[in-house]
Image (cartoon, rainbow, N blue to C red; front, side):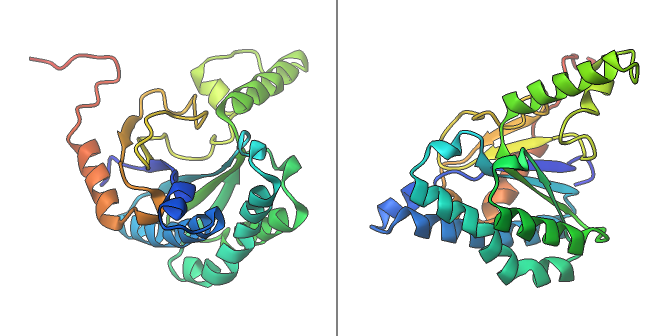
Length: 233
């Protein structure tokens, strides 16, 4: 697993999972939260250095207000139930995204989890909350332009631009997984995914298992990552 440091997952299909069972969409999201705990603990045991989960996108505000409000209550549900277990497993919690629109209670819950786990040295469990890849790139460009104008930086290349991204302190993204049989990136880590491997899984997120993660990792391991080069004959 040494060459697989960072996995990102688009946790898709909670609503459809619930609908299939005649349940309200909120029950799908609740089940999805339980799945976060299971997969995070397992990924940590595998030695993955960072797991980034697409928790709420900048586009998700378009959903019905009732559903958005429930989604914003999930951090409290998750951390109240599982923070002690994350601590026990030495997992470090981080966040990326624009937090300005996030309700104060959810924001404070996350800040407390980040504070309590800040000295942990195991896997980074990174939540993308109110995150959009396009807005991240625009934000990075604006910050670079300001620093350039102020004389703080003179050169812009891939390495220096990376320092303006939310993910600047995280390992390079190796593998992106999307559940629920949708085959698109949905504005997630657009810059970071440039040479990542993509794996699309039929299973809805609440049904995603540790075995499914193993299969996705096996798929990744069996691919030949050339990064634009060619194999030497």
